[in-house]
Amino acid sequence: AQSVTQLGSHVSVSEGALVLLRCNYSSSVPPYLFWYVQYPNQGLQLLLKYTSAATLVKGINGFEAEFKKSETSFHLTKPSAHMSDAAEYFCAVSEDSGYSTLTFGKGTMLLVSP
Amino acid sequence: EAQVTQNPRYLITVTGKKLTVTCSQNMNHEYMSWYRQDPGLGLRQIYYSMNVEVTDKGDVPEGYKVSRKEKRNFPLILESPSPNQTSLYFCASSPGQGVWEKLFFGSGTQLSVL
Image (cartoon, rainbow over all chains, first blue to last red; front, side, top):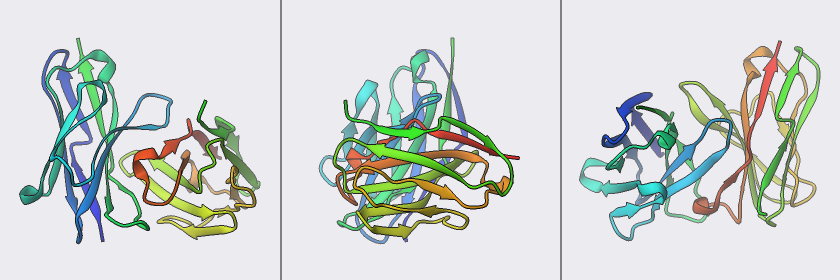
């Protein structure tokens, strides 16, 4: 069975500061990993994905994430936060198979202050 | 424009009064799914469909029904809503199960059951 744990339901940063959102996964087979972003009053949008190619994955809006198998982690980072980054972020895991399910974490709300 | 359309956007109802939330996609996607989002619990899958006339239970199917008579539509039916079904609901579609990087979400339906 697969699962995802996101540490911290809320993370607060100042504009211009480093953003770090933590995600740890559990999977019995090689995983596919995803980060989705949800802006207020909208559905989820794909931010980036890891599918066993490069371990450092770059996504939209300056975000990136690094797959670390030894730590079973897939943390999301951005060097400099912008006010428009304020949103809820979801980490998700699936298995490398055609009939896999997608399991979401509980989400982390990113708050950005001026 | 590729999109997943949910209606209504907001719905207030009373316990026991049957309701249907519609979902339609214009991308000819085979896979469609319903999720509910609750604070602190993230997204949980209710039902999914891999193609026309093929549906299956997700993690929290109790109290819900779905149908997939046409490829583009995947309505969510609450035969006898209860207050614990007050939640934010999302419909999503993708070209196939496992193609999670192309999972499109609707804008959500906020349901309140009094």
